Image (cartoon, rainbow, N blue to C red; front, side):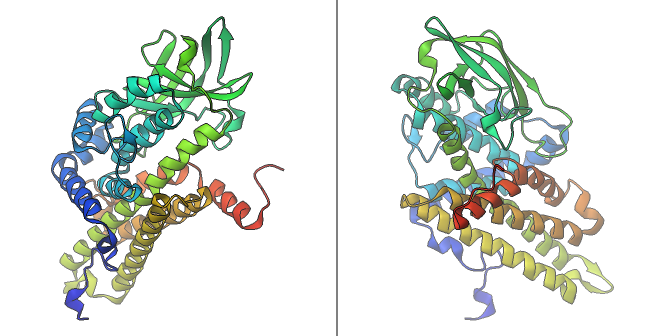
Length: 392
């Protein structure tokens, strides 16, 4: 095969393994991102704003909100197709993929998987269309990696439930119409569908972020929030419910960060080919080519990991520890690609005129949320040894 047959942007021809539908979804989301998102994302990031309602309607028309779910206005695509959509969105910004991921893989998935038929019919069609926004309340100020230590409580009062507590780092919390909130009860941890206009529910914007600035983040305060009996998920108890949702969101991250890494690699490639120093392009120097080769390897390796996990998920054989491997490996790889690409752009690397440092800063958050690097490492350790190291 001649060198002309090698595509620097898909070196291992990974996308040739996509089905026709998956390729069509890739093209549609990539074009939407190029036209509707890319021109604005640097300004959203710089000003720490996001037109959430407009985005929701646009994503609803595109069909990416809860796209991997069946029925209730959801597209019912393959898991790989959903992953590819996440990849194309995060190629623009992690905050945009997070917007779609929280709506579809946390709020909507929780209602779809654990909700009553009434809850599904009430909320899922509106959430899929982008006519309503959802958020997911699990993390607390003192309960991040250890959700079992949550302090938010729900107590029975007659036939009602009354919720009290605080949730932290909640994406879309300030704009959500409905919140899926997990709370401790006498029966164990349970999930609740909470309309955000319920008295006692408050969402306060988290400001001064240095990462994921093109994303809306909130603190949720529940002060005597009274809900009817049918607001609770009917069957699921314990951490099984929220952890199943987190696994869905982590799957999207495995694909999404490949997009962020790809953008950083392609930016470094284009920049070093066009930028001349000492009479020749930067790409003509051995040290630069070694860096480009390293970026190329990591982007393609991460893409292969994502696609394999996607095929396992569609086959119904994906284990949660395999998602942990993907999240750990791919975020680590993407962050290293972003850091190296940033250095290759020199002083221009810190400018919002280029996307690299924005991606680098965002990936610092992606490394932490949906399970820190350390927690996923321990999950893998338990998977291969059979010994849990989470608690002494």
